[in-house]
Structures are given as C-alpha cells and as structure tokens.
Length: 476
Image 1: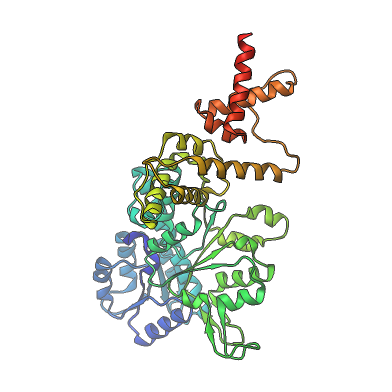
Image 2: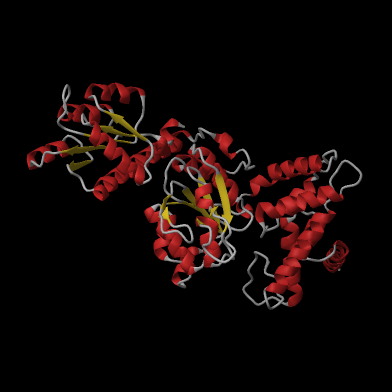
C-alpha cells in the first residue's frame, strides 16, 4: 500500500538556513500540513530520497556543498513523480526559466508570501496524489488484481461490478480528496466508506454521522462542537465530530437531505479545512477526510435548487455508484449462505440447508431494500425454522407477496406493473392478458408453481385452478 498513501508521506524542505526551515515548517503546520521533514545539508538530500518516499520537495538553489541547481535535474531524473518547488532569493528571469525547463513544479522568490507558499505546496500534493492514483488504476486495469482485498472482507460478493468498484476505491483511498458514494437504500454504502478508511492508512478514527433531519444549529454543534456558554444549556465545552475524526475519516450519511445553510458550512470546511466551534472566535484546523453517501439523485436536487452545485462538484472528486442487488443477482447464493450461517450462529441453531426453490424465488424479486432487505428475510426465515434440515420458503413467499401488494397500492391505480414480455399487434382481451401474465410468471419461475404464484401475488391453489382451466380448454 506504500504507493497509495501519498497523503502520509512527508513534505521535504531543503535549505542551508535553519531559520528559513523553521519558519517554513511552522507556516505549513498552521495550514494543516503537519508531516514535514527538514534537511539543512544538501549532501543528505539524495540519500534521504533513496531511503524514503516524499510527497513534495521544496528546494533552495544557493547552498554550500551541492547547489540546488545541481540537485534539481538529478532529482527530477531519479524521482520523476516527485514535485520539486524551487524557493530562492534569485529574481533573475533566466534562472527561473532554466529551473522550469529542468522540471521544477513551481518557482518561488524569497521572501515568499505565506498564502502563495502554502498554495504552491498544496497544489504539489494534489498532483502527487493524482499521479499515484493514475499509476494504481493502470495496474488494476492490466492485472485485475486487488492488493488489499482484506479491506473489503465485510462485503460479501462475487460480482465483477463490485470488484471493479473495489479496485477504484483502492486506487483513490490514499487521496485527501472527498469521496461521494451513491446508491439505493440498503446496498452497503457505509461498509464501503469503512473500507476506504481502512485502505487510507489514516491513524485517526472512522466517525459516522447521519445528517438527515439535523437542523442547521444541530448540524453545526454535531460537526464543530461548542464552547462552554455558547448557548443556553451549554454548561461544558464539547468537541465535535470533526475533531473526533482528526487524522481519520468523517462519514456523512444522507447528505442529500442537508439544509441549505448546512451545505454552505460543509463547503467552507472542505475548501478552507478550517472551522469555528459554536461560541468561539478561534479557528481550528481540520485534517479529516470527508466521505459522503446518499440515496438521492443529487443532479436532480441541483436542478431543483435543493443542493448546491459548488458543493456537489467539491464532494464528487471521487464518486462511485453502488449497483443494486437486482443488478448483481449472482451474489444471491453467497449472500444467502452467509446470512444463514450468521443468523444460525446468533440464534445458536444448526444451519439449515437452502432449497433450490428459494434461489428461484429470490432471483425473480426486485429487492427494493437491497442487501439489507435480503438479510432481514433470511434472519426471519432462520428464526422461524423449527424442524427438518431444509429451510422453509413459506416466510419468504409471505414477505415478498406483502411487499408486492404494498408496491401496487402505492402506484395509485392498483395496476400490477409486471406485463408479459410478449407484445401483440392487437389489444388483448382481459383473459388473454391474464394468460400471458401467468405464462411469463411460470417462465421466470422455471416451472415452479409456488414461485410463480408469489410473483403473481396469488395463492398457489388459485394459480393451480387457473392452470387447470387452461389445460381443460386446450383439451376441448
């Protein structure tokens, strides 16, 4: 994982003046860049880089022993991915042009304005991080390999779509930039956020906050904390979740439901990496990595002026959409097996066998609640299991039928939205439409009448009667 953790690598400052090294380190530290290594003797630069990776290098040109002008082309040649910022007292245009031709990332003239210095270093860090991510993505595309598959151990899947998603997250995990995870309810967005945190190598905590339903004051207090006396009832100071997640990951769930005023505060935190606790006039630095999740379509929210476009584009530097369970039904056998084992262990039961009929039933269900719904179905089925070695399908049929009835009632017109695939040139009669519907259900169920009856939302005896009437007419 060494190549991925560009954010954990030091910024190296090289200057023969100790006072310049100290002040530069303090400026970067106040801007939230804490991992800084200083080198006063230019002869130590190349040996250090040979032993340690760095995220960026700030190099003085005029030093005893080995000048920066000599070091620059050698460093660029030996460490091409390392951004080198030249910082010197020379204002000669020819010198600046020569350095840029040699491959310098930026050229700063002493004394450098603090904001200019910090901005240059931050841009260098972003470029370094992007280079690492591109290299990682190239490796994954060529090898179809996960270097740290154990980070995704909590996510049970054999889906190629999910594997591709894992590879992308592994490539961008070391970045400091936000990650936006989208997908329907129950697909496992928080599990992926936890995986990103594990892969990032960050030493701080993973802190999760559901921001749905938080008004602006509660949002600010939850994230930023407050000083004693900030408001009525604030008898003691309290740090917020940003401070608790320091050097770690802050996971904000359901960000599509944030209030407009809260969106402004989150945007400011992302841009400035600083915040004010409630009741305080002292800014605090933030080195937290933001990961967000939502089941909303934020593009629609933006068009309806419910979500700020600048915040969306800031959050979606790295964006992944988790496919719903109905688009990766190859996962059904492994998920059912995992949940049966898990439920049986928690209930201290012997794991029952799963009948083939169950997988046929589940494969024809659209799972509006995704993996979370499947887990609930399996746990309920195992809890109801009393005797025999095979898990009963009865509770699954009942739950699926109830959901389908609920979905039909919510459609507003009472019509079932599962027409047969066959299209006829003329308008079919009611009896013909019913027959086509039954035939399609039997086809999808693989001839299993119990599963077909569940898909149709009727009892098995009712389906048998309809099938019997059809056979009787065919024999006449």
